[in-house]
Image (cartoon, rainbow, N blue to C red; front, side, top):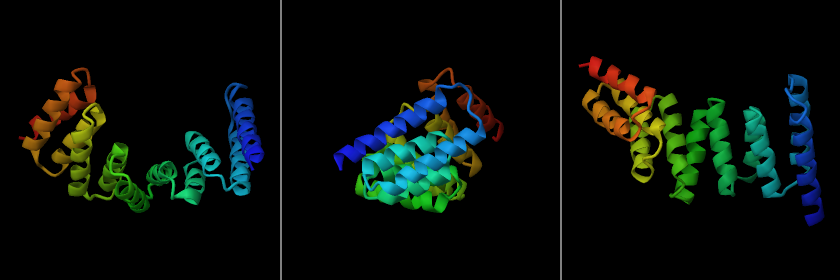
Length: 192
């Protein structure tokens, strides 16, 4: 079993290196690699190998295929996170919320799950839930300018301009070079 695991991992590395080391890749090469990776995922039940395959597919922009691979091992946190993020990238936001929620319930300290779920809630127009998750995220990690921008934007969207200004001013203090936060601040002040 261990020998088969290493064979698959080495095979994946050679496929990836062979494809990307030749310079720009075309759609035909990407599709060939996707098919090869999907075939590899069918022959293994190894959770780590499936994660590597799903991760490679995700990085190739093959989010549907990545989701299918990650879903094979939802009992592993990293595969559950991969499934949630892949679902969000294909606008399957209901399932993204479901997967992120499972991850949060299982392992509450995976902060990026709150950020991802907030983005999914925003797409579902469940703004109060998105705000709650972004606040939770910022409580634990205030080093992401996009969290400040996203929260400020949500407050602008629901006409809570004073809250938007407070969040965006705070974000501007942490990220004074952020043009995104500055443009949202201008928008928040114009709404008054």
